[in-house]
Length: 93
Image: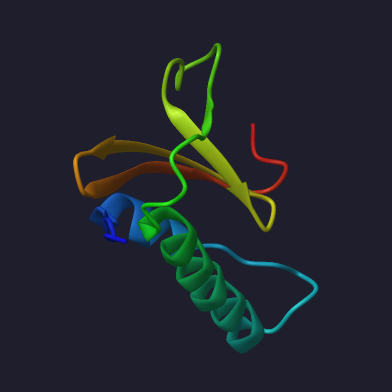
């Protein structure tokens, strides 16, 4: 089994680090984001998983997407690389 490389461009990283929840401390929130990133990389880097949903309308039309822990991630796959294009937080329009 081969694995895909997952890349996180700087704007996506900055957005993830800006996530805040009024219900949790900054440390708990950072821990959640860290676990989210690890989970996302495990899922997206696994070459055995090849089918993902495709957005049908809106600004991300025709892009692959996956929902992990309430976050919607838009990405593109080129050979053995997955590039994260955008992340939407839960309840974000």
